[in-house]
Length: 197
Image 1 (cartoon, helix red, strand yellow):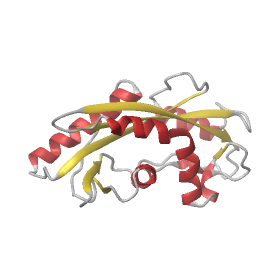
Image 2 (cartoon, helix red, strand yellow; image 1 turned 90 degrees about the horizontal axis):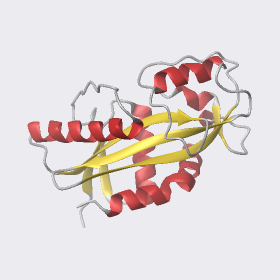
Image 3 (tube, one colour; image 1 turned 180 degrees about the horizontal axis):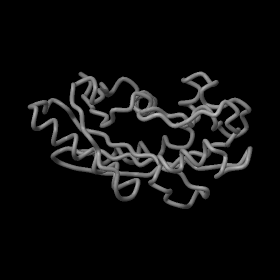
Image 4 (tube, one colour; image 1 turned 45 degrees about the vertical axis):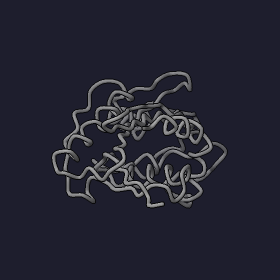
């Protein structure tokens, strides 16, 4: 059976690599993932609303771009938006740039304090749409190298670590890091994709 094409609606190469690996981990050999860069579409996303609403907006907007360019061979488009929360049960703050700056500066978290990565994941096509928020705990390890935020990258991988790890994410093998994330989001992703038509 041929793989179904899935567009991941991001211009961020770090996010594309992470999301495609997570989805491949849940659904091995089922989908063929493409980024906006792969199909030469640039979308300037307007970052307003909650994490989940932003993810839905991105998925829908990119699906409409596919229609405009006659690329309807795609099964769905996936929108992703990240935020953070100091408590697992909170939905998360959608102002990720401001939160990222606060984390990198050391103003938001103490060393070894936990923060939850809240990731809105949404899908969209002509027949259905759906969305979830996943929660992954990470530990702040400090920023001795004074790393700053750069657009379309994920600088927090240099200051945040998985639970019970002394290594920050950038020091961990990519496959092992994906397995850590899957530990917290596999079930949510399976439930989300179960309802796609």
